[in-house]
Length: 265
Image (cartoon, rainbow, N blue to C red; front, side):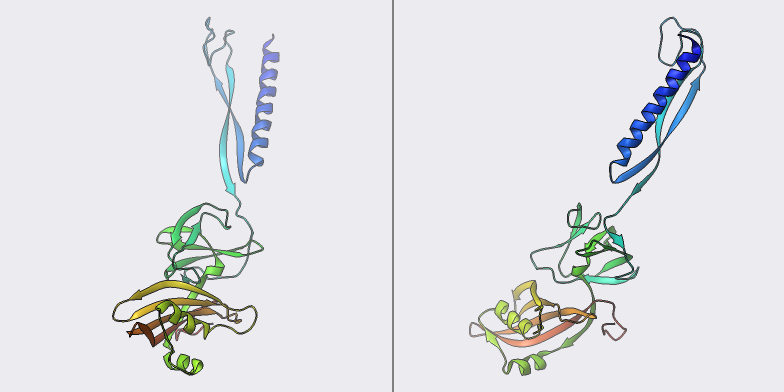
């Protein structure tokens, strides 16, 4: 075979290898650009045919595929919605025996990085929101780990007020029940929306009993764009194997932000 024939054959092989590599990389979510690096190595005549040499005493040509850049696409579409970069937001509407999953990318099928406790209130928003059609997902920083959470379970904590008198007036009496779980539920139900869809009532902190009993419920969904819901912290006085309502502390859960006075924007 002549030297010209050999060089043409090698060039054809390089093109074929490059085409195969491109097809393999474009079939996945991550797209990797490749280049073909041509290395010319001078050599002397060899009688053994060792790698990198030519038995004819001519330079040999080798090809190497090198990655140059990687671009990973996120699910969904970016939208101008949700918390601004640097906003501090809280977990809302997550049950006491559950966690809010921090995921590597938007979507319920993405890998879980960490579990965020149901009353955690110091997430830092990163100013990115993705619309997946059935849900919005936002990027947050949780104790130094960046990831994505479902916007349904995120809100701003507004002002906390004493609503004991208002609850007693609404119920027509000071409630007393056998358990703190029941007492808290009665108070939470007195604050839920009466319109469809009805509010979702979530036990976010299980009952504990000391000198006083206490329990926390989130009432999510009040038919207001600014107010996502209410966090109800209920205290009961143990007496004769019952718990009598002592105090109700209510924190407003806001959807778009909070003023300096603690009102929802």
